[in-house]
View 1 (cartoon, rainbow over the protein chains, first blue to last red):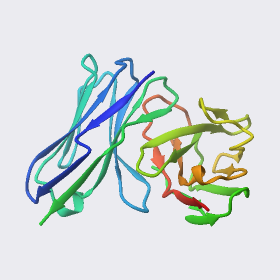
View 2 (cartoon, each protein chain N blue to C red; view 1 turned 120 degrees about the vertical axis):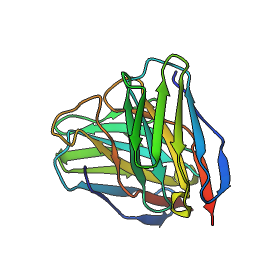
View 3 (cartoon, rainbow over the protein chains, first blue to last red; view 1 turned 90 degrees about the horizontal axis):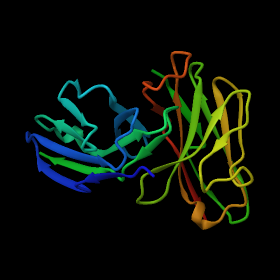
Amino acid sequence: KQEVTQIPAALSVPEGENLVLNCSFTDSAIYNLQWFRQDPGKGLTSLLLIQSSQREQTSGRLNASLDKSSGRSTLYIAASQPGDSATYLCAVDSGGYNKLIFGAGTRLAVHP
Amino acid sequence: SAVISQKPSRDICQRGTSLTIQCQVDSQVTMMFWYRQQPGQSLTLIATANQGSEATYESGFVIDKFPISRPNLTFSTLTVSNMSPEDSSIYLCSVAGTSGRAGIWDTQYFGPGTRLTVL
């Protein structure tokens, strides 16, 4: 059974820092991995989707990497801003058909 | 992309009653999903709702407790039946296949969620 773990559970950093969020999964046979951002009362916003054949994806200040063999993904946020404060969720699709298994998330606070 | 709305946004219900949550998408989508997020926990998939067929439920979830309808390609409902305080959660609708075909590379889009409190 696939399990997804995210470390750290919470993170508080000053504005401007570069930071790394970690995601690990127990079964390396995945179809894709997605990173989401969750803001209170606003549902989830998809940040990056990495297909199983890819090693990384970039969008603006965000870069996500995927190492299937070791069961790990990292989300790198450059030059963090207070507006980046949210919960970041990692999710994997193990069986295809877009059925996602989520990690518990990393709650990020960026203070001015 | 897809814009998803859910109704109601929140509700407070009495034990033993039922609540139906609506999910509306601004475009036709192949696949719709219902997730639950219990307090302090991450999201868990309840079921997949495909148009024209019965919903497919994940382990631990049954149709009698969470009946789902999918009458067309833009709309679905989830009913939480005979509620107990343990059903207090955020219920989220999501969609994939916005291109009109289901693909394993599809980004998923989520609605804003319905916050349910059962007393």
